[in-house]
Image (cartoon, rainbow, N blue to C red; front, side, top):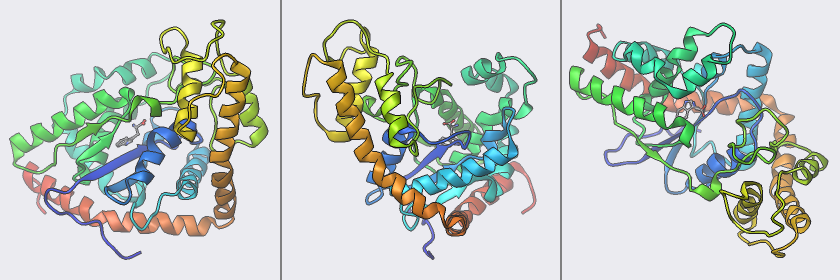
Length: 329
Ligand code: TRP
């Protein structure tokens, strides 16, 4: 693993970020990981595990460490090829925090307090960490650090990406050309997996029982699907407004098999098909994960290599930013 991510003009570089606050689920796989893996031949990508972001709310140190390693292991098991797609742990490239501070000096307090996610999360009660407020600036640093041109974002991250674009442009205007201004790329709607128990919410956003973890054993997957919310309409039809649960199941089936449901009347048959499709998708991933998990040192080496590959890009960006803003290099 010796190649360095290069910086050619006119090139595309995509940054996909994951927060190690929990186990990766089916929504992460279909919405983020699979698109990344499919694009590996044509698009340069970096997969970022944003461990510093996992500390913006009350956190358990051991869990953050465990999820960081587990997410990296799952990424490898799912088919992320670290030769082409560096897997990077945010805290292992120190430039993230350095650029974070420099960007704080062009970000306004009001821009941070205006963030919808900040308002929602800080309304939950209990002490609010200052890092929760400044987290979108850290995310901007993640993106700008690598001259990223494309950031796949779901709706909940739109406002944060907009802030990254604003800060990049503002910095460039005040202090000279420094950052590439990134574009958002939207996952197509079918790849947007909703929670199975609360099908109006994105999978991963509710704390309930409607998630399918990528490492869930088959019987847990079956049970989650058996309990998936449907409705009384008795017809298997895409109608996101009135039949969100059934629509979600149809979309998951389409994403995993490319096929429509076989029986337009039976929810039981639909659930059986979806269960089979998910099991067929996840069984090989589970098996590869079990193998890789026996060798955590290998995974740690992959992460060290990933950091090493991207560090020159990060260092060059920080150097430009330091020079522009008035620091001695
Ligand atoms: N904040 C993102 C999330 O919660 C994760 C993330 C961190 C990210 N840094 C990023 C996503 C940079 C894209 C680019 O989903």
